[in-house]
Length: 317
Ligand code: NAD
Ligand code: KPL
Image (cartoon, rainbow, N blue to C red; front, side):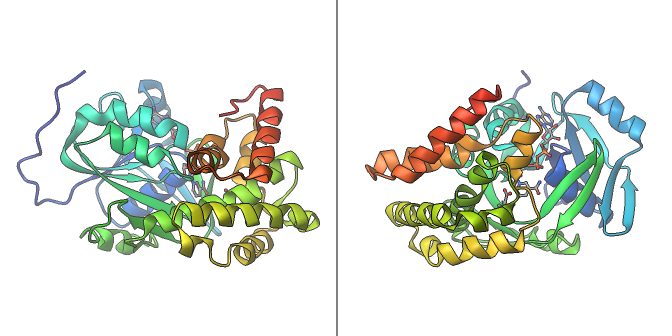
C-alpha cells in the first residue's frame, strides 16, 4: 500500500474531480462536469475495465434526443494518483470498503462527496477517512445505464449537499452550477437523508414484495399509511421532527409522480443484484432498536423482505 500523499504544491489550481464508479449517477456527474470543461478523472475498477473504457471511446450521456460521447480521462481505482476531491458514486454497501482502499491516495484535507442513498454508509466512510472532509449528497435525480459506458439522464431532480457536522458551503458549488448539476447546500443534510430514507422505506420494499411499479401501491393504501405512521414515529425518535412533517402526503405525492417507475430496489432484485436494504430498512430497524421503539409493521416488513431476498440467493443485509 503506498504512503499517504502530501497535498500538491499548487493547491490554488482547481482540484480535479476524481469520480469513483462510472455507473449511473457517477457517469451523470462526470459527463456534465467534463462537458463544462472541468477537469475530471474517472476511477474504474481495474485494468480490464480501463481497457474496455478506452475501447468504447469514452462515456456517453443521453439526455432526451441528444447523445454525446465524452473522452474523459480515466485511471484504475487501484492506482489513481493523488486525490484532492473525490465523488464516491458507488452503492452504499461498497462505500466504506472502497473508501478504505482509496485512503492512502487522499491528500490531507481532501473532500469526499458521498452520493449513497439511505443512511449508515456515510458514518462508515467518515470513520474510515478521518483525514478527509466528508460531504453527504441526497440526490433525487434519476439515471440508468443503457450499456456499460452509456448513461441515460432519466429524470430531473435536486442534489442537496451538506456536512453532517454543519459547516459553510464550499467554493466549488459554483462549478456544479456551471456544469448544469442542480446543487443546493444545506446545514440540515441529515434531515434530507432521513426524509428520503423514510420515503424509500415506505415504497421500495413493498414494490419488491408485490413485484409491482410504484403506482400500484395505490391499491395497498392501508399498508403504506401504516408504515408511514411508524416511520413518522421513528423520525421523531431520532430528533428529525421536520423530516416527519407531512410524510404521508409526501409519500403519496412520490407514488403518483413516479407511478410508472420501478423503484430502485425493485429493479435491483429483478436483475438479481444486491439491494441497499441494510442502509434503508436495516438502518431504520437498527435505530428503532437503539431507541427501544417498537415498530411492528417495519419489523414485519423487514423480515418478509429478508426472506424474499434469501429465497432468491441475494444478501438479506
Ligand atoms: P451503479 O451500480 O449504476 O454504479 C455504481 C458503480 O460503482 C458501478 O459502475 C460499479 O462498477 C462501480 N464500482 C463498484 N466497485 C468499484 C471499484 N472497486 N472501482 C471502481 N468502480 C467501482 O449505481 P448508481 O445507480 O449510480 O447508484 C449509486 C448510489 O446513488 C446508490 O447508493 C444509489 O442508491 C444512489 N442513487 C442512485 C440514483 C439513480 O438514479 N441511479 C438516484 C439517487 C440515488
Ligand atoms: O427513490 C426512489 C427509488 O426508487 O429508490 C423512489 C423515490 C421511490 C422512486 O422510485
